[in-house]
Length: 398
Image (cartoon, rainbow, N blue to C red; front, side, top):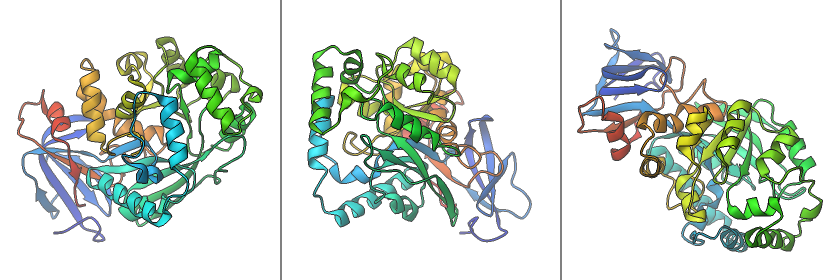
């Protein structure tokens, strides 16, 4: 079978339906590829192109998992969420040390390969050790790997860098764990190192975090006790507000180059602040529901114009790394949100949040030839995207 990897070969994939976030849904269309890049979506195949016609279904851009922790894959099933965030964090940090690193690497690679097969073209991955970075490359998934700082100085992130390896992006970016675990000055310093790639930070994930900032509540006290037990001098972290988002805004670290993760406890006024500042919020529905029993109000966030993208979080808190399962969960909990908006969260929005929209998340000319195919029985244009989320999809050989 001809592929775009053959230098100079033009290949055209036809499906009953083709969806591009910027161009909408088209019927009986061709996606034209050449030299590993998309040439465009056309009504007919170019003369001389190798034609690949697919069974009834939908072609769409490769998915973007904007937030995961691949190196934690070895913890799958070992610290299941119980609706108690502080308890889960405590169990995680006690289970994490002392594991077999070779076995953990094999498990991470297997998870990365499953992600690729299910249609993930780009991932935003949090790493404290860097041990899983090459797993994405080997699996064929491009990745922005966020070196995450923990505490005042531990887990020093690498400087920003980006390189392409046979069409797969391997980028190093900077992250801070959370506003409750990193001193104010350290957060500002880390954000200052994010120039060409986004800065990432977990935010407002649990009630414990909100109570901790407010200085009241039993869950906040439990989180403070946990942090102090880990040797963190949280009383001298320099908090500037009684809510974590306002604290980050006061520090000047929330802007169009900031990727906030979770946002479960954010209110509508805070969603509007995020929208005005141009920052991105990544929601991880199944992880959030398992750890806290709640998730960010996606429908309200979308109404404010805030940029939303989608992630799976890690196998330590989610049953798998399937973005299709996240999409189905989102649709159950946000029945008023059109499927097109949900799919945008899993494609172009994720690419924009990771500052990679010139390469991923779309079928526009010049983007990477990463195509997902979802088999469908549905023939009505009104229901095609709903059916695609129901069926799920897989990466097409390109």
